[in-house]
Image (cartoon, rainbow, N blue to C red; front, side, top):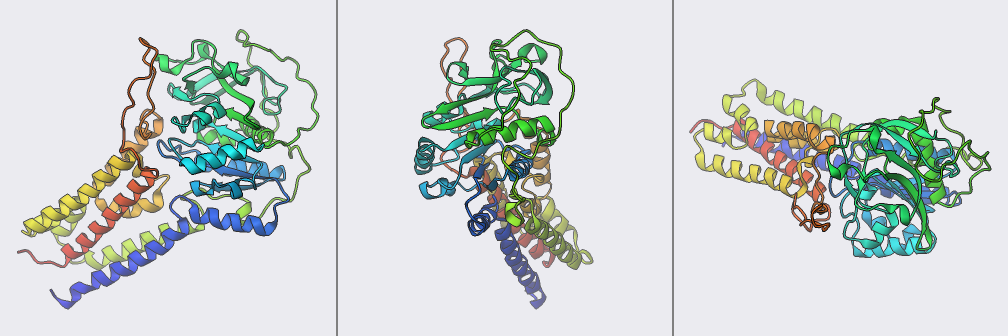
Length: 487
């Protein structure tokens, strides 16, 4: 091989080193940010109350998670609280959890904690800790009975996103005092496997006549709690099924509802408030919707402290922050340099090598090499999908990793397009395994449906990285193909 053919190898080695270094800054799931955040928090001081926002997903991942992290951080900072955000389950230890007044499960899905982490969280709640669950927190840990009692009820199904009427049953609680008796809003309306009313204090319920619920799995037979709280096992638990959409976290009333619920779970005393005009004890007949959006939000229930700065001011979500922008810019820059270097003499087989891994070698007449590359890279791609699900290829939430994934060619863009159209609508789940549904004929759970391989705790992340690694391998093949002559 000519000496010049070694140049792509050196260039690629530099590219991969830069990619790995920048990827470490992003931390894939935000682990590096979370560790830095914890260090900064300790240096500032632990006199302020703190909340831990946990948003790990082992199944379907909501696009609104970054918006939720930002909103919670802003809202609690105004109330004098500090916030740490993480997707790292190793933060669930006895020593670490005792630093927090409240742990918020923000649209978590699937099995997100191992046995030791579950025991630590149980001990935290029994010692008086607070729990706040938001939306898909009810789509979490189906095999952990204690968690099911903590959250109140597990997710069963939902109709399409649409407008519906929320009946606010208790307007004396701090998390619903600001809401109208009938609250019209658009969201993804969860139905639950069991009705939690006998075990919790229901704050709000859903008027099932106000929205389309075509399938039995999307309603609860008329009594449909949607937000509640209860004292549980020595601690305090508050849950709201609202918060699927990105827009929710910019909605003034929902932001107040969210903030006050977390503060209640964290044991923050509410400021005295005037009694509402009406406090229905049970779900009433539909009423005329109240008007008025209300004020955006107050300063908080305790004297406002100076907003935190730096890492404490906002917990960057995965794929956000300066390091991610640097990674994207570096990736685009390296890609432009590499392809410009070969564009002038780019033969047909180089383009084919990107269109389908291995096809460039076949075009050169190197059948054995082409078949090996094709089988190897496409095998990595399909294995990544099998392990972690279609959401592994996500240009919106995992866009730092989508650059190397795109080296797999049009197949990556096709899977991403399907992901955006299908998975993000909530019609496809990726739990490990999918939770069983209730057979209406027998009243018993049906066998669980396997939608991806079981037993891998970080399946989505593993699949994402495997597909990205396959893309980098194909980039090597593309560069090698560009320097070869037909056989």
